[in-house]
Amino acid sequence: MLAGVMTELEKSQKDAKTARVNLVLMGILHFFFAFFASLGYAIYLDYWKPFLVATLTAIASIVAAGIVGGILGAVIGAAGGTDEAAGVIGIMVGVLFGFIAPLVSFLMFRARVLALRDRVRSV
Image (cartoon, rainbow, N blue to C red; front, side):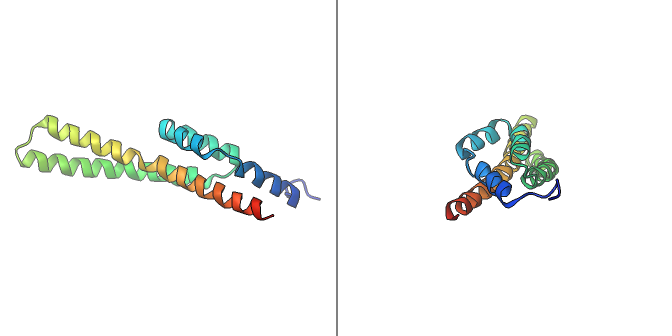
């Protein structure tokens, strides 16, 4: 058999390993160490799609947070608000947009783990 081809037994062992992942720990790690948790689980599970999608989501979130924060800052400034209020709103928008990428990564990994748990149970 070819060296790069995975046998059915190796595939089921890999699926069983993935199905045993602790989702609570995964969620906590994604909350506190978003990028590194996503990268670590991508390496551990050999499943790169959530990491790549979350990275692209993070880039889009940074751009969107800048645009939304800028618009809100301009509206606050035009309404006679202070620079401090505009700054606080801009920071809050950035923080809220910062939660999107880790959430996307966690939910994609979670969906994969739950699907594999169902597959392993049915075998």
